[in-house]
Length: 270
Image (cartoon, rainbow, N blue to C red; front, side):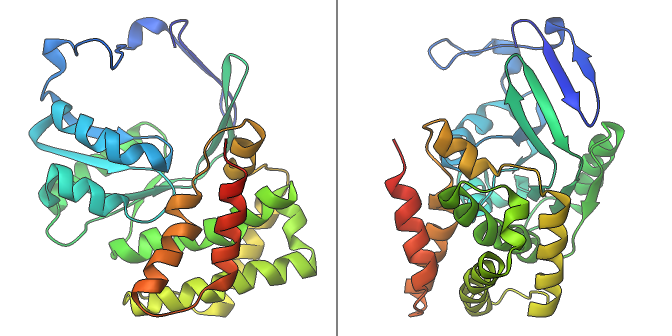
């Protein structure tokens, strides 16, 4: 970032370093940045949300909004606890990106889904965020149900990421019948938990069709969990299959496949 930002792939963008402000946790934040932001977006791994939720309070205006584009369950709850429910939007992203050398590769063009949790910001605030993201070319859309928005993305991550990571597979390889059947078994366990959480989901047939579509569209992609394992980084399993296991236990439901996947991926952590 000290040399600016270079984006390749879906779109080629060069952004000069003069457009950025830099800070380190070891150094004090510039005075002018405190409580001056209309919007704070946490574009981080799931395990960093708890810490950065607290940092967001330093930057947000009293009527500002904050959201986390991280994979997994529980981020809206974390942000609401730290920043107050009236400042938090539910959000997901389907854009795909990874770093390669000095560049960021925009590997897949998707969008940003947004929703208002109960007791959240005003609809007018939500529309302001939508306008800002649309002006940036990030293709935002609004979902009427915050829980459904999050769970629909999480179900895909649960079904794809750990199996691809443990098998060292490209997404498209999961379309092979034995592996695809395993993806659906992961989904069926998760759908039981979502039902106990009173989350309305599409039918199994609709999910299966969507899963096939996603795997086909991203067939050459290496999922983020596999990238993390290869790089020796902590994965997002705690916010995905492990989080599902904890919810299942609270409802007295057995999810042995998800529990096994969570244990195996955790064993790959540094």
